[in-house]
Length: 192
Image (tube, rainbow, N blue to C red; front, side, top):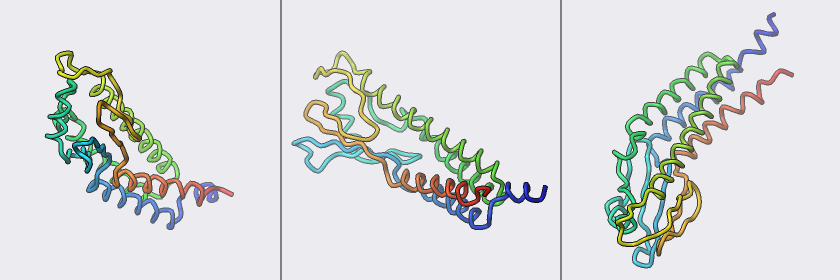
C-alpha cells in the first residue's frame, strides 16, 4: 500500500517543473498568440493583425478598409467575443497548474493535461471557424468579386494582389513550452 501511494505522488522536481509551467502560462498572456501579415505591392512592409488573448492590435483600420473592397466583414474586438473571456480561461489554467504543482498527485496532473489539450483543440477549431466565417461570407455587393476562401491558421494565402502570412505568436510558444513541462513528469516519475 505504501508503494502504491508513493507511485501516485510526483517528485519535488516534477512539482517544480509544473510550477514553472504555471509561470509560463501567465507570461503568455502578455504576448501575441497569433498574427497575420498582409503584403502587397503598395504595402511592401506589410500590414498586421496581431491577436493577444484579450485584444487586437496592428493596422486593423487599414486592413478593414481594404477588405471592404472584397466584401469581407470588419475585424474588430466585438466580432471576437472570445477576447472578452479568454484571459480568464488562461488565468484559470495557470491556477489549476499551480494547484497541481502543490498537490503533486499524478491523477490530478493527468486531468490537467487533458483539460489543457481540450482547451487547445477548442481554441484551434474556434480560430479556424472564425477565419472560415470571414473568408466565405463575402458581401455580394462588394466592388471586387473573388471566390470565397479560408485563410490558414499557419501558412501563406493569396487573395487578389495580397499575400498573407499567418503565424503563431510568442505567447503560444510559451504555452507549448508549458505543456511540454507538464509532460516531463509523466516520463520522469513513471513507475519502474
